[in-house]
Length: 142
Image 1 (tube, rainbow, N blue to C red):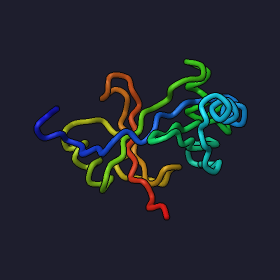
Image 2: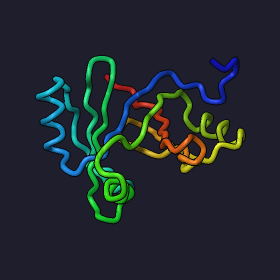
Image 3: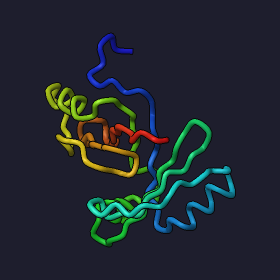
Image 4: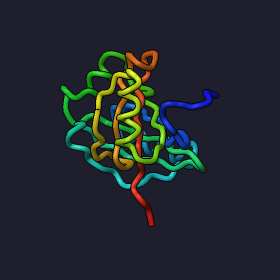
């Protein structure tokens, strides 16, 4: 482990899977693995329907495109359904994004924005070996 990592990630928050049929995918993960779905949300700026599935101490996020021209639709068209991104939980997300940018890491988001899991920001895959990485500062939950 690096002595002083650039980003202070607490843990992996979720792995996201791009799917063509959100409802069928929820059923599969519920019936097969006992996953517990949260509420389905429509995230307008990302053009997806999405849900977080709780599985013990881990989460999966399922994302279904709501537009044929969305990034997720293009991802599925090019690569098929499958793992879309990995998300790390952080505190003070805007500070973390600033530190990453100062270190020369290419960002998709220089400022956080609302997402399914809280405030989010993405690191461009060209800075991370082809892996799309999301950072999230989760909302406080009761």
